[in-house]
Every structure is written in C-alpha cells, then in structure tokens.
Image 1: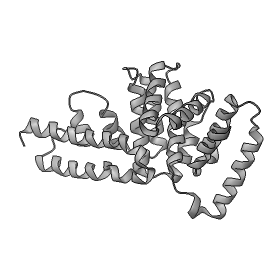
Image 2 (image 1 turned 90 degrees about the horizontal axis):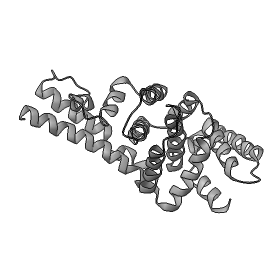
Image 3 (image 1 turned 180 degrees about the vertical axis):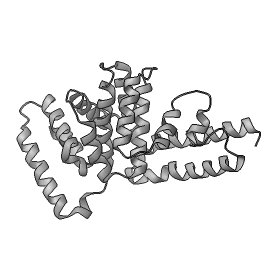
Image 4 (image 1 turned 135 degrees about the horizontal axis):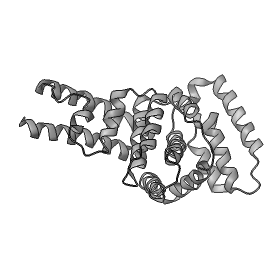
Length: 253
C-alpha cells in the first residue's frame, strides 16, 4: 500500500478511530489484497487509548479529518435516494481535485469508492464529528453535502431529508440549515433566508444580519484546516455577499 498508507496516515487525527475509522478500514479492505482488518482495528484501539491518555494533543481536527468526514458523509447522501448517480460521483471527484490536486484526490476517491459500499450510521459518524470539529467546520461539511446533492441538477426529497438529519446530528440549528440550503436554490426570498432574516426586516436589521453572517462564515474560521479547504469557504462567503447585494438592490440601499 506504500504511498497510499503514507497519505492516509499523514493527516488523520480523530477520524482514525470510531465509526469513521471503521469505514476507512472497510474501504481499504475492499481494494487492497491481503489487507488485514484485524491489524487496522488494533491500530484503532491503540490510537483511541493514546488519545484518551493524552486528549489535548490528539483531539484537534486536522486536514485529513475533514477530508475523511467529507467522504463518509458524502457516501451517505449519495445513497439516500436509492441510487448512485455518476454526476454526483463526478462532483465529489472534481471537488477533491480542486482542493487536493491529482495524486491526493485519486487516493481519496479510491477510498470513497470503497466507503460507499458500506452501510454507515450517519448518526454515529456525526456524533464523532461534533465531538472534535468546530461549528464553522461542520457548517462547511453541510455546504459540501448540498453541493453533492445538486450535482445531478435535481435535489430529491430523500437527499434533502438525509442532509437535514445530518444537520441535526451535527447540532446545526434550523436557521443555519435553511441558510446554507438557500445558497443552492434560485427562488424568491432566498437572499433573506441566506441572511437568516424575514422579508419584513428593516434596513437596519438587514445590515446587522449581514455583519453577523460575515463573522459566522468568514473563511478565516477554517484556516486551521489548511488552504485546500478555503475554496468552499470562500464560495459560501460569496453567497452571503451576493445575497446582501441583491437585497440592497431591491431596496435601493
């Protein structure tokens, strides 16, 4: 496994253990001949023991943790409508190419094709994620999942339902969920939903909401995850800017 295991181990922290680690182990076993799942499981046990003994050192989210969390949750959403659409797979691959470059993206997608074969408990995975990942990072995960669902140009109700459940498991509130969801729909009133306000809001309330959302979604909040994850953060931030500009134009502010 050489380069693959070197890539896999380099950026993993909390996702090496728990249900995400189990999904990773299953995926590796699906394409590596002679892979010993028991050895991987023992490494997980050793890792979890070390993390417990030295929690402050091992609990930080690393770039690889965000990457693995994306892969596992993406597999849940893609399968939620009962089929795996090639356009959705292509979206995942293209996103990883833009974030990580060809070699790392190829490794990630190889792993993803193994993960998607496994039945995964979204609730258990999300519990693991929310224990270790910041709120800003969890919002970014949700943004990515809506992008996957929209990749085939049609978001099915089953996909929306699955993403909403995931949002709940990740302790993302209804307003934040509706805000991110609105970024992927071109419907009347969505600019207000993105800023988490009603159409009846005063001009001062609009400005205050914009300032609040700028702070919430500023890309700097994800800088600890590495430059590779800032592209999606900037897209989300741009949606806030566009929503505010649209409302300003409508109100002649």
